[in-house]
Amino acid sequence: MQKDPICSMMVDDKAAALKSEHEGKTFYFCSPGCKATFDKDPHRYAHR
Image (cartoon, rainbow, N blue to C red; front, side, top):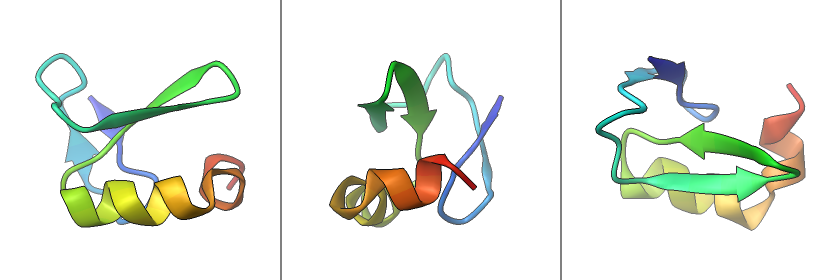
């Protein structure tokens, strides 16, 4: 399980359809909205 960096919801990384890469790390998302928010400014959310 991984934490969605936008809403902090726990996401099953083995089954997650929504993910993004940033600086060599994979981030997983619970919804298209969270992924879109992250993709607009990944540095802001990846380094919390």
